[in-house]
Image 1 (tube, rainbow, N blue to C red):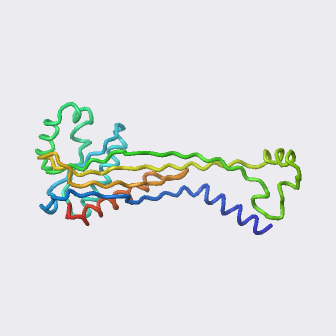
Image 2: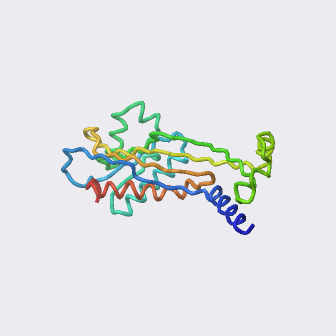
Image 3: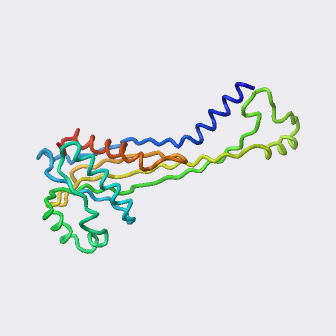
Length: 208
């Protein structure tokens, strides 16, 4: 019984822990890029919800600033419809603010999996054998007596691409994968995300 209770506790912890993890899946750098660290980065998150956009842009900006990189956020300068309506005007406004490059963060893909698991006593202890039911019908009736647990898992892929504002050319890009389980605190996962992206940009010589 003690072992059964320990196993039950472990399963509950696994379901309710709300773990999240972010990994850098791949990076790319323009093969002809040789100019060294950029001067000032404008951070643009493609997110229609204003609050979410500002939170993410501020997080990336703070991470860049912590590395000594000059930056600015764009949510307080331009709306997404304004950028879409007039590329040249948007570019001009960003250049006037001192930016020579723009880091665009967008959702590349999102996969959601919802798994339902039925838990019955025989799952916890080898001493039980399907409630002692030996025939198929007894087993069938027994399967409806357990507890059903859900396991929701999301895989969020973000593309972070750095572009030159003068030429429009892409200089660098990285794809991150964040795994969110049920109960995950998405705010807490922002820091690992920004850290991995900025660290990779610095390693490739794009920022200071």
